[in-house]
Length: 219
Ligand SMILES: C[S@@+](CC[C@H](N)C(=O)[O-])C[C@H]1O[C@@H](n2cnc3c(N)ncnc32)[C@H](O)[C@@H]1O
Image 1 (cartoon, rainbow, N blue to C red):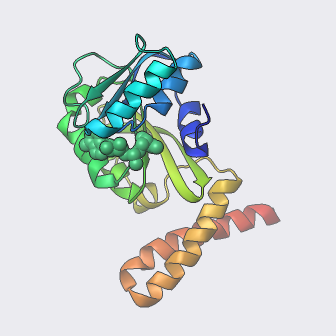
Image 2: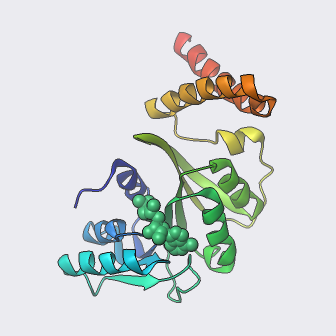
């Protein structure tokens, strides 16, 4: 099964686990591959709509994995009773992701690794995590048509005194995709800040980060 570059990146950030819960799993591709590759022993493909779940059921059956990958109708993790040591919440907007976490906060606090990839407003997701005592342990930027940040987190119990930089840019692995994204954002916010001063801070942060990268090249 061929996964998108984004789903491959998410999979690569999962450490071996017992039971993966993919929230908003759509067609269960991630769960099937995680179990097939031995990354997770079993998996739950959760979705809040029957249509995607029916397709998941078929995909799981075609792979002869009906004992190992279980589709469950669930809004977020609310209908999940079995403990899962890894959660993936990907391909959703920031407000849906924070709502899912908030609705099942006690469960989320017990999860060893939560991998999050939002399609929008990553700063809202980071603010939610920091405010609720989660640690962000790893962050990567993937370009798969668009740029997608991927966050790895777990509950630590201590509130982090975050800065605007932590929310808007974040401590992302500094590879070539990261610097392409920084440059893309710098140009994007330069244009936006000409129209609306609300975006000045965004431009300043991306411009500074871009400048630091150029300085390192000169060194
Ligand atoms: C765009 S797909 C993302 C699929 C996959 N996770 C990915 O990243 O490619 C979003 C899926 O999440 C489901 N979804 C939306 N809100 C949800 C919620 N609150 N709980 C569970 N699933 C949800 C949708 O039905 C849809 O199948």
